[in-house]
Image 1 (tube, rainbow, N blue to C red):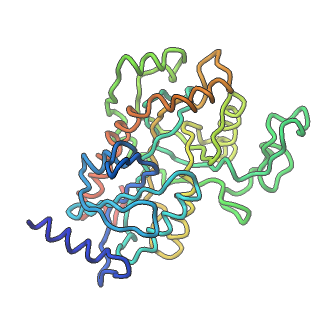
Image 2 (image 1 turned 60 degrees about the horizontal axis):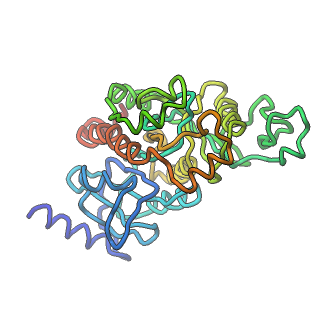
Image 3 (image 1 turned 45 degrees about the horizontal axis):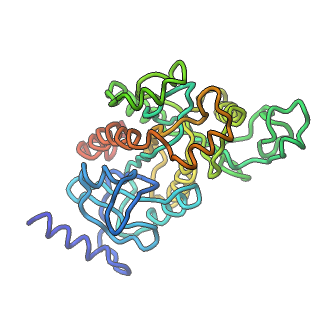
Length: 348
């Protein structure tokens, strides 16, 4: 009964055009990017496990976004579905940050989404906590056929005239915010808390991994590794090599490309704007990605054939990636929310 009364009150406060006299202090925001809903039924996606297993039972209107917010009023955990790619992610995060119903000034933000995993550093189903996220769209570009023959790529950083020209521009600059460094202490804490998590494995996953070697063939595991973010899906060994070098270039040789996705620099840009207004803290952001497929096809498969295969068949390890995201991220979210007397003012 207490839950129903509280939920009813929250829904009234959340009605369009009506803000709470005192904003609700949010402890953790779960950021998801895609969901499959058919006929009013939530089938599967990045939001599904949080709705059903946490559970986030309260649904709050969010007219400035693409989907209602989900909320746990007892543990003060809120979940948002941003939509896919950097533009929707940035717009959705700013819309939430400006929402007068919520006090997000001390909130932790946990992005939990699927991605492509580089088989050099991880396997399908593996999860990676990012220390940096790097934008793959913000650059100058020549068609490789127009580039000098000694260039390894036609992609050139802003303010430079050749690929990977040193010194690298500032990560955050007037031209663009190309890379964001996350709070390393918080990331390392989350990784230490989850690194020994045993991720499920089965014969289908083993078959998917079999053509690869090294870590790409290992059972799924938890690691630390960086995200290369692009609203354009890319395929092939040459672009995979570019992703590795692009991440290394922007992080001063310290970052290791692990996951390819579409939203994280958009999320960080949105949060940066919110931080300017005191509505968010960039020191309280965690990004976890799980490999739903590989960034390159198995040995012997051309880039064009790999593109065609994934276009028709989808990403083969999506169910495993979704399950592992919740398995790894939820204990971190639970600790941050349940130890609020400490974590509100002291970042782990």
